[in-house]
Image 1: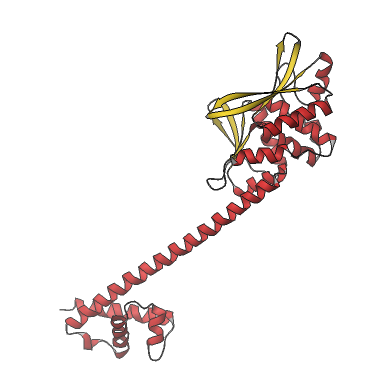
Image 2: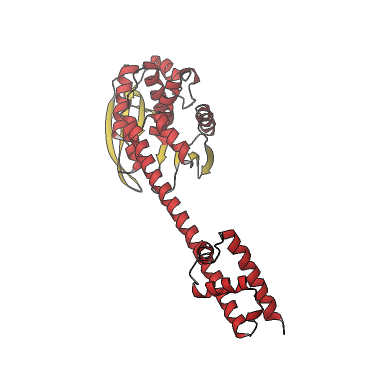
Length: 309
């Protein structure tokens, strides 16, 4: 099962204790996955989802909140690969429309977020959970961090952004073909989103992978830094040794001061040593900065002497 499916399963199995929260979550399922149609028996309200646990939750909410007689059907649908989809249906009457409008769902196919149901933080959390169950996707944390909600109504998308902003989530919007996508790529924000919808196990799994990736990246950065520093040290040592040898072969070696001669000999004898290690070999010993200063003087003196005719 995909990580997104695991998150949906966990979120779908979370049933709020309060009636107001259940009503808010049902509202989200209806607004983002619901539709109406007509059959020989009259009007039918249905919710289409790809997750069995979500279908069970919608079925339970229909019975508890609307006192509707619901039914669930499943069928195979091809979407990238064959998956099973679930359809929760209830017959509705004219008198049901009052409750549907309260939930933000209008039989004439209008949809709007029912702000009157989202006055409490717990209800906002439940509604956002329903949004994710209906339209959400999250990629595996081992790859790129990405969470999105795919909508097909610009007004609903604007209201969804407004709601997510109210709960301190920073989201972005983009267009993908005929759909509007609300997405999060920041790992901290994705963690906050998972915490918000109550997917605690998924949150821990996400955090474990994030910590491992962070540690791996830190180690890689340190190794790369040390490798680069080592390469610079080797290049400098090779250049300095070659410069000292040229100076000795040019018969101008005796023109160096005793201090510079000592450092030059140590460099040729210990080309693998760092400046700090060379400083420990000098008599008297010098700090790394002192050796660096003396080495610059040595290189300048050697270059000036070699340039003389």
